Each structure stands twice: as C-alpha cells, then as structure tokens.
Length: 404
Image (cartoon, rainbow, N blue to C red):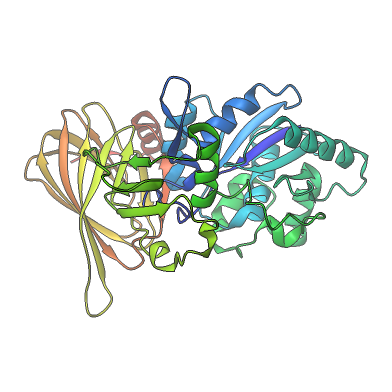
C-alpha cells in the first residue's frame, strides 16, 4: 500500500506556536534521545519509513508549508503540494490525481490517508494493514475508515471516479488549477467512522494542546513544568508548579497540566490570532514588524526580510495582495513578470496582485516588505518555480526575459 500523510492545516491548533506558515504537525515539541526537538510529522515519517507493508510514502502539504516540510523531512521527501487548504477529503482526491498522473501509480493501487500528527503504534498500524486488505477484497474500492484509527483507505481508481462524478479534473495539473474554488470537505463527512471512539479518551489523531500534554507526559513524566520557548529569550518559572508554557512572538500561553480536560478551555479568542509573526525558510528569514487595519478595512503588514547570499525566494504570485519592497542593504537580482533587473540598497519596487516575482541575493539582502490588501492572514501565494534555475528555465521558455 501507499501511505499519504495529510499535513495541510490552517495552523490554528497550537497557538501561539502554530500559524498559517507552520501548521501544528510541523511544530517541534517532542525531544528525541539526543535532546533534539522534533515535530509530530517527523516522528511519524521516520517510523513509517521502516514499516515493511508500506510501498511508498508521500506527504500532502499546503503550499505555504512546503518549505518547512522539506526542511524537516529532507529534500528526498515526496511532497504533494496543495494550492489551497480544502479539507482532508479534497487533499485525498488531489493525492490520488498526483499519484496517477505524476507518480504513475496503477488505478488498482491501495492508498491509505493518515493525519500527519497520527500517533504511531504497532497495533494501529496493524489496523491499517487489515483495512488495506479488506479494501483489496472489495469491488467498490471506495474510502473506508479504520476503526477509530484516524486512517482512511481507498482504491486510487475509485477516488478518481469520484472526481469525474463531480465533473472535476482527474489529473493533478488540471485539478490544481480549480482547486481553490472547490468546496472544502473533510474525510469524516464522506466516510463516518464505523466504530465510535471512546469519548473519555483524547483523540490521538488531531494535534491539540490536550494531545501534546498527554504525549509529553508519556516521555517527560506527569509532573513538573514544561516550556516551549520560540523567542530565544530566557524564561524563568518561579513559584508555579506543574504548568506548561508556550511562548513565541505571537503570544504567551500558560496551561495547567492538572486540568482534566483542556477541550473545555475557550480557545476562540486564541484561534483568531493567526497572523504569523515570523518565518524561517531555506532562503533566510522574515519577521513581522507591524500590522494595521484602516477604517475602510484595508490591511497592511510590514515585514523585514533577510535573504542569505546565493539564496532565492522562489517565483510565484499573490492572488489578492500587492507588495512594496524597499532594499535596505545588499545586492541581488529580481524577476518581475519574466523581466530581470539588479537591485541594491535604496531600490524600491511595487508588486501588484498577480505579479509574478522572485528575488535572489548576490550578497546578503535586507528588505522592508509591506503587504496591502484584505485577509492577510490567509495564504494566497501560488508558487510557479522553487529554484532560481527553474525560474530561468521558465523565463527562457516564455522567451520574455529581458535585462533592464
């Protein structure tokens, strides 16, 4: 069977550590034997790579989270990029289209979709193996659930047939073009679990702070203080015991580890604070300095970008927002709509919505970037090329690259 880890999330589960650019499965929370902090998806990915029953392992991930996924899982990880977040069922359909068109998988292939923060154990994997076997005996090959395991299995051809029934493209390339317009649907809505979960037990398959504290208790013990500090500043806890602290530039969360059910906590206010305050990528870093909303509803967000020498941001476009770039220091090259020009300290560039753009630093670049638009907390970036070499090929193919 082929396993697809569903990692595309909105980043609301683990505020203040998660955000739209760092979904909860990618938040580093659990120490390994060397003391290095790992994310849930890293733990699961490593365990599944050793499972003999799995013939292929893929990760479906939101476009804005693909860079972090590659950094954590390695460049060899096979990523299925989602142009937008449209729920686990849509992600499974997109994965089926990718596996058939891009990976060349047979229509008879059994696919198992698993949440990326799934808590691995041998018993649950055995349930998945059994589910895969039952599907092979089924003529329909339609999605089936795995007895509360959080896993869903389907035959690739059957999922493609469902796309046809909805008059949606069956190929990954074409489906990506319309993916942002399709209705958001979760697998649970299409395939209700056949066995009710024990409501007294926390779910192992959705990353929430209740789950994190429970999993941490298994490794770090049930007593004592826990701290997840993403600020890089010293944190001291005095006079308090058995609490958990999560802190980042987005805010501070203090939790009582003795609270029997964290699901009773009113998270609504926290879930509204989802604008990412920082981003780390292969090309460098971005830090949010300011965010405002005018009386007419126009939003602006100011960020400071650092692009390391020899690195590039990739090439793509924003659907709704426009940007203003001011180069503070360093030198580099920028391509806007396949037109190349050099930039240096003092260069100011305006990028309208849907302008295709990318920048490469020849020496370390510092930029001030201002976003204008509405819904700035939502990811509206569409990637067209990842590396500068791909950008040059794209430009040459279009025969529109010009030195300005």
